[in-house]
Image (cartoon, rainbow, N blue to C red; front, top):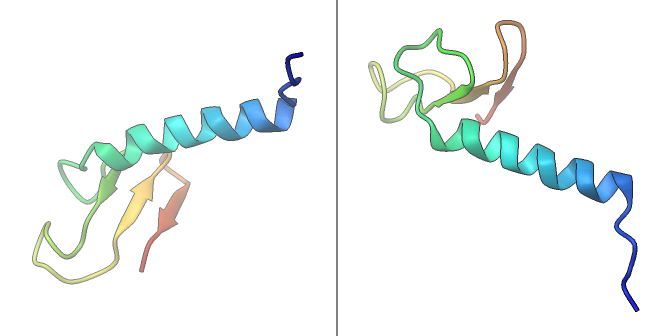
Length: 62
């Protein structure tokens, strides 16, 4: 018997794969979109790391 996968589970899996693509792609500059800026290794080595989702939305890591 197969277990039904809920819509929430499917959404969570798709979200993780989309965010995973953003995390795997480094930003070419600090104003990049759909990428991750690692402040420790990019730019002058200071500041905040973030994943840019769109022009107005970002997830800050520190």
